[in-house]
Image 1 (cartoon, rainbow, N blue to C red):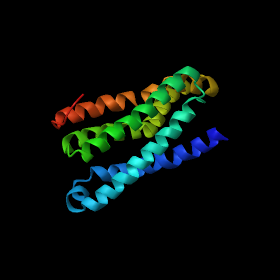
Image 2: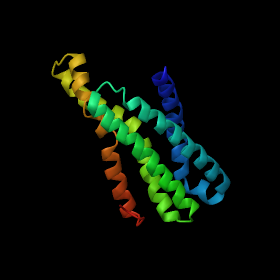
Image 3: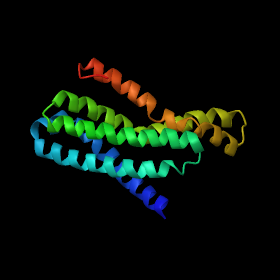
Image 4: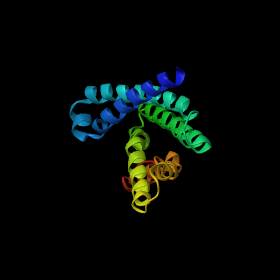
Length: 168
């Protein structure tokens, strides 16, 4: 029952974060409608906190065992921590740090679509080579707990540096 609750909480709140997150990067919303930006930001942060907590619970029941627990569990913890850092940065008036941390946060939020892209990219070649679906899916899914988010962080860190924001 706890896993089912965590699953539905995760898909609901992580989905909401994925939906509202891109609006936070709209310069026109930020510049012309600061109240809307802040309201969406509160929704995003709350969604990440709830979705990330649920994801952490779910990570212990991953079908790829240790790789899933460690990969998805680490993603969940870092997702929440990075988002909290972004929130603290803006509360202390550090806009540049806030922007950098929110870029990292959304890169982690985007792990869901990235997971599906990697799964597809790793599955299709095996199927074309005649590997049975169950075997192909199992071997394609094994590295996904890490591939779904680590490359996103690398790419966003380059973006942060290129924009002159505080880098890691």
